[in-house]
Length: 334
Image (cartoon, rainbow, N blue to C red; front, side, top):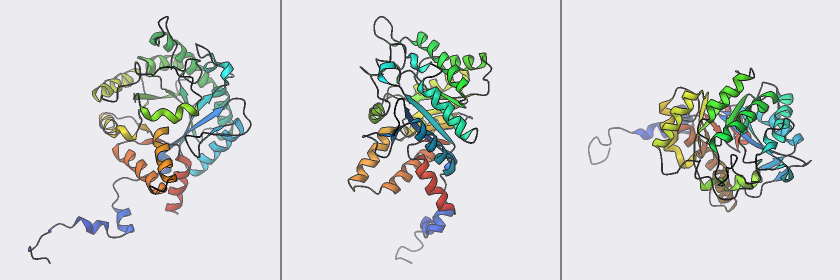
């Protein structure tokens, strides 16, 4: 006892005394099933191509993508989100490679579905930016602005070819007004009522997308501020959320994750559908770069960032560390 009588009367440190005690009273737990692996597949390559800005991440060939999907499944990861990277010569103003049944993303969906069937949830990015020669997420009008409603028609086509290829979940990510409703109608029209929609509900115009542009071989000229959200805004995300749910979203997502944990928490408080968050390329790259310099403990930092995202309300986390972390979590439980 100290000289101040009975104080401190409460001793919260009692519940932090040992690793076993801390594990027992932990309020937030990560599980491999919380994790989804984003993966890039590039047309015309036979060996994986490293992404310089994302150490440890590659543009996959079709063969190595199949292997990565199996590894994710074996580690306990729930899903894989696929991004196609076409040959530059196939890019055009309308992004037609994105709706070609034999385009790289549709081929990759079929490959992965043949490899893992229904055991791993196969998700696909539904957006035109990888396939357009101007790099925007939609088709442009005569003034060079993204034409919202013309883009919706292209998204409807994309949804149908991805569903025909065997995808379980489509992720319309272009932030066009009405995209969820149009995609839902397009899927239902061809009898694909069972294909789910993961709505990119709050997708911010972020500085942290930089490494992703390398990953997908982006041809972007200009920026995406007229359709992605302003980082200053929160209420706007809740409006987008209400619209996505009204249009038929099965799941909703906040992207990026780390800089927008307040938005994530608000969204999670507001809905009764699964909530996802995407830990994007810049978040990944910062941790890897600092760890390479010896400035932080890499493994602890990875788990801390993911725990923070989970604590803020994400039931599902898209992260490039998904397979690695799932293996770590699985080993810890054995």
